[in-house]
Structures are given as structure tokens and as C-alpha cells.
Image (cartoon, rainbow over all chains, first blue to last red):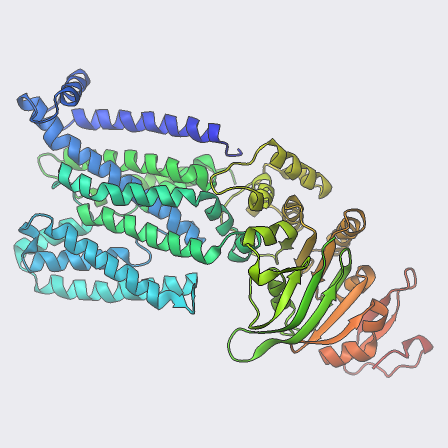
Length: 337
Length: 273
């Protein structure tokens, strides 16, 4: 199916309705079961009288569940968009947002912050993790640069090597960590939304929305890019600029997403891949559809993570893989050969 | 009709010149074949002609405009390239691939309009690819995919089309079909065509002019009769060949000779080297 503005709007509207449904369900389930009518009433009250929520349902929905859902949605969208971007940049549908080392850098930042006691300071962890990620992005960029151009294979190698190096340091840090730090580290490495609040959302929102918007403006360039660099050049694309933009923006939104919740795997790989199987590879549809699907998927996963073994919370990264992998296999099998 | 003018061009990837002091003029509407041994600089020359590579010295002019000063999208409106066979991992359909040929004409956020679709359909009709317009490009056979790429090049509405070893993965039937097609495009659409090829016989049969490269320099250039002579071919490639005439078309024809093949006895093998 050829991608037209009409098709993009139709599919994205449907996916947006799906997202609203997922949010509604997620708001109503948990330790306190609330009916969807109750949820809607509280949301409307909250919208009319912003500020301090009223009553126990108000507090549960507006102060506990809603920020967590918004953050999970934002992170899911960011990781899915970054996944599309890295897959286009490396011309490999199996790439994911962590492939060029952003994750290892942010993990190193976060683990260091936990060990020196920064994790109790407000925004200590996100800041340390973001700095670690950005440091890695710059490092990989400079190692992966050949002359004035970015060579994707060199970039990939640089990412993998630097990633391995940082992982080694993280291993070392874990081996000397105290017990209570250890569980914090493990939760961060597997992803955790239990510290969500509106401030965190407001901090990462501009990075993720801005980055996604600029990435989307290059969508047609990505289509040409995945046909091969020479092809893209001969069809009029400034490939070097496109590669630089894709690398920097996708890394930036990945760094922002990871800094608030830790490493959540699978979203950035499976979502773009599934959307491609469902709606085709055109990035003009792939990017917004992936963002919406990513948001729904991660909100759903996080809902399962906090409810399935209540009162214990599972790490959301474990849930994304457990539920994502079978779904992915189903899509693979369903595809006409 | 657009010409290609290469003036004293030098290019190197690392430290030795891959293209050295090369000057060449291809007139609008001409049909050129570029031949030469591996590493003689054929593909590099092609990449210099559409600005994928920039020469360290010298200048390339396309239709009178200096390539280094033109915008990429303006180059793409004049020059199209049909690439060598390569792997594509993303399942774009044939029609989507052909529509990509319209992208030099589109703004960054603009979608293809009905005119673009008409041009894509016209290009697919010409290359007989409409039958599989909805099939993913990575599921087509080599010959089908090749024709889709030619359709994409045509959708660019270029004046020049460059081909990089277009027939290397095709069986003989598709090789002839391919050359018949571009021959027709050259004659009917007055397209300037330059084909990099390993197949000297096909080049000599179809191309009006042949450029023989060796070591990044022009070894010989002229009509097939002038260039495809045993003397030049065997010197450039370093192998024994026999050159005679195609009895039906009169074009020069080469036959490879094994090392212990007998020396020429028959009168028509006097071209042997």
C-alpha cells in the first residue's frame, strides 16, 4: 500500500484510539481496582480543577498512576522512534537504540551515581545517566568518523567496542557494590518506572518531542537511505548530513528516555519491526505509527509489571521481553513468505 | 540532450591515484561503454560523474554546469544511476521504489501527487515492471529488480543515465533484453547513456563509443571497431584474446584464448595477439 497523508492519518488515528484504551485500562487496574467510569470522572475533575487531587481515587489516579503512565508512554514512543532511526542509519532492520553504546554509557553514569550516593538527590540519577549517555555518543561519533564522513560499519564497531569496555567497568563496579546498592542497580538495569513524577516528564518531554519532530522531517530521506548510500546520494539526498542528524537525534532521545527509567530492552527493536510488517517500511508512516505503538506497548508492559505479582513489582524490562518475544514470533510466522 | 565533460580529473581514496589525469567528453545523446580490467577505475569514474565522489583535482561538467557547485537534487534531475546489484533489507514494493525516483522534485515534507504517479506508471510500463508493482523489491529476481531500478532512473526524468555493471547478475536472455531496452531509450528518448561493463562483446555490439581504462587512465577510446582490437584488449587485460567479426552485425567480437591455444592459422584470426 502506497503511503499517502490520508493513510497516515487513518492508521495513526486508529493507533491513537488504541493508546487511549490502553491508558484507560492501565489507570483502572492496580492494588485498588477502579471502574473506568470512576477513572473518567477523576480525569475530568482533574482537568477542570488542576492542582491538588481530591479523595483517595483522585490521589491514586492523578498522582500515582497517571504520571507513571505518561512517562512509560513517552519512553516507549522515544525508544520506538530511535529504533526506526538506528535501523535506517545502519540499513539493518535488526538494529536497536542501544546498539551504538548509548545504553552502556548511561548505565555507567547511573551505576556510578548509585555507588557514590547520588541516587537519593533529586534528579541525581537521570542527570548522571544522561551525562554518561551523551559522553558515549560523542566518543562513538569521534571514533566512528572517517575523515569528514560517518562510516556506518566503523560506527557500529566503535559502538560495540565502547559498549563492551563500559560493560566491563560496570561489572567491576557491581562486584564491589554493597547489597542495598546492588538491588537498585539491578532494577535500573532492567528498567523501572516507580519513581515517575510530573517533573521528570516535563524535563524529558522537550528532548523526546523535539527530537522526534526533527527526525520525522527527514522521513523520506530515510526511505532513500535504506536503499543504499549511493542510491540516496544519486536521488538527491545529502547523506552525510542525514547520517549525522539521525545518529545525534536518535541518540539524544534514547539518552533522555533511558535517563528517567533505566534500560528497557526490546521496545526499540520489536516495535519498528512489527509496524513495518503491518504497515510497510515507508518511514513517513513507520515513525509516527511506531511512536504510538511503542507508547501503548510500554504502558501495557508496565501495567503488567506492577500488577501481575502485586504487591511485588517486576522490572518492566523483563516484561517487555517476556510478552514481546512471543508476539514477535507470531508476526514472523504470520508473514506471507 | 545533456553532455558530460570531464576535465583533467584526478581522484584518490587513500594515497595512490585511482583516476589520473582523465579527460573525456560525452556528447548529448551518445551511448558509451566503459570497459577495463578490475581496479582500472571504472566504478570510481562513474561515481565521479554524479558527485558521489569529488575529484581532488580537475572538474566534471554536466550539461555545462560544474558538478561540484550544483545542488544534489539538481544533479539528480539531470543524472540517474542504476546501481550494481546489492542487498536491500527493507521490503519496499516495486512501485514505492520507482516513486523514489521522484524525490529530487519533492520538497522535504511533500508527498507524491498524481503527476508523480503517472510518471512512475509510465516508467514501469516502459520497463515491463507493472506486473509486479505491488511486490516487495527484495522478493524479486535479479532481472526483475534490475528493471525496477531502471524504471526508478526513468522516473527521475534524467537526461543522462549511468549504469554500473548492469548485466553482471543476469542470464543471457535478460542481458540482451536489458541492452535492447537501453538502446531504445537512447534512440527514442535521446538519453545520454554510459554503461560500465565487464562484457566486452555486449558493449561492442550496442555502444557507439567505447572507453577502455587501465590503471585509472584512458588506454584507448573511440568506436568499438577502433577500441575492441586484439592488440588493445590483450594489452589492457593482460590476456590472450581472439577478435573477429560478428557475422550478422559486423561488430567486433572477442573470444578468450587459453594459454596453450594454438597460434593463429586461419585468415580471420589475424587480429589475434
